[in-house]
Each structure stands twice: as structure tokens, then as C-alpha cells.
Amino acid sequence: MSNDFEKRKHSSKGTTNTPLQKGLDGSKKAFSVPIRIGNYIRHIPFIAHLIRAAQRFNDRMGSQFGAAITYFSFLSLIPILMLSFAIAGFVLASNPDLLAKLINGIANSISDPTLANTLKNSVDTAIKQRTTVGLTGLAIALYSGVNWVGNLREAILAQSRNVWERTHEDKEKIYSQYIRDVFSLFGLLFALVITLSLNSIAGSAQATIVHALGLEGIEWLRPVWTSIGMTISISANYLLFLWILWILPRHRPERKALFQGTLMAAIGFEIIKSIMTMMLPRLASSPSGAAFGSVIGLMAFFYFFARLTLFCAAWIATTEKKE
Image (cartoon, rainbow, N blue to C red):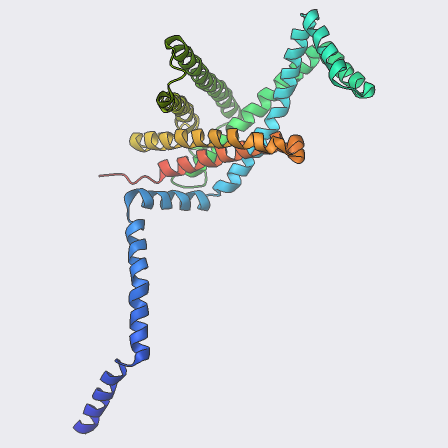
């Protein structure tokens, strides 16, 4: 009996040293190294935070909300264009010389007389109906802008709330919601004007200072001026996203998380603007891009803006609180 047990014990020990078993052990060790590396990378605080934010973004339909915001953003451009045409009509009506130059420019630049007459008639219509088009565009722009702000706010709150569904405390009367969204729209426009003004003033002041000091020909200073301009632009973006992620949703996240997420959004928005600035001329250079390049560029810009905003909202919401 004992001899049989010893034989089985010896045979089981022998099987562990077979080439197949050695190969399996080696493969396990080979696979364990990248698994350990992957676990180590995933446990880095910043990477772990990115993973949590991405999971929240996907679980709460961030891509779908981003597409909806893109649709409403593009749709809101129609009344803005109507308002712009009305303003142009008022300017042309009060400036006959400018109107004559525009009509002469159309006649000289277009060889087809039918198309030239069509454009002239369009200009005349825009001038004659400027009041109606302007008031209609203003009313529709206000309505669509308020709805756009409301949709953006709800999408941010979907990422920010502890529970995805709205609770009873989150619900409010329809007229109170519209009044709040009107003030939010004007506040957002004010923040946008400040952002664009800072970028414009900083760029003009930088060019004036460089020209006044005669530093245009110094090559090694160009990266310095570029860095200064980029820093000012990111600071302006920071103010804009601070309004979007903090004031607009009427949500009070942890301050450190809010400041970090807003800085991430500001830097990401500057990257998006730089990429779009480089890509739009290339789109316009092709025949199809000349016809649809501006539309595709605007839709891509709105989509990336929406996804960036919602991802940063998810980042802020998934910050681990230190006790």
C-alpha cells in the first residue's frame, strides 16, 4: 500500500517537470509581467481618475449628450445668421456708398448676369425686410439660446449628480427654469465676450509691444511670445469654463476638483482651437471641402467642445474626497 502511494507521489512530481508544464509555467510568468505593469499604471492616481471619469462619461451617455448639444448648437446658428443679415441690412441702408460698392463688387466679380441679379435682389430684400428679419431672428435666437443653455445644463448635471435621475429637489417649475436659463444665457454671453476680448486685446498689445521695441527679427523670442499668448488664451478659456461648469449648472462641487477640471477644460479647448485652425484651411482647399468644409468644421468644433465639457464634468464628479 505504501509502495503504491510512493509511486503515485513520484509520478505526480515527475509530471510537473514535463516540457509542457514548463512551457505553461513560462507563459504564466510572461503574461504576469504586463499584467503587473498594467495594474501598476491603473493604480497611478491620475490614471485611475481618468478611468473613473471615462466610465462615468460612458455610463451616463456622454457621447449621446454631446451629439444632442452639437445638434442644438448648430440649429441655434440659423437665427443668429438672420440677426446678422438684419444688422447688415441696417448698416447698408444707412450707408449708400457702402451699398453701391457692394453691388458693384457683385457685378464685377460674377460673370453670370442671372446669378449677379439674384444676389443683388437678395441684398435688396435684406435691406427692405431688415426690421422683420431682425425681430424674428432675435426672438428665435433668444428662444433657441435659452433651450441650448437648458440642454447644456442638464447634460452637465447628468454627469455631476450622485444619482443620474433627477430627484424631487432638482425639479422646478417651468417658468422658474426659463427665467434662470435666460439669466444664464446672458451670463454665458458676457463670459464669452470677456474671453474673446481678452484674446483680442492680448494679441494686439503683444504685437504692438513687439513692434514698438523692434523685436520682430529676433527668432529666439518667438517661442516666448507664443507661450505668453497661449497662457493668456488659456486663462480666458478658464474663465469661460468656470462659468459653464460651476455657475451654469448651479452645482457646488469640491473646489479643488472644480479648479482642476476647469483647467483641464481650458487647456483642452485651446488644443481644439489650434487643431481646427490648422484643419479648416485644408478642408477648404478641396472641391468638396469648399462646399461643406465650413459646415463640417463647425459641427466638429461643437461636438468636441461638448464632449470636452461633459468629460471634465465627469472628472470633477469622480474626484475622490480626502477625509
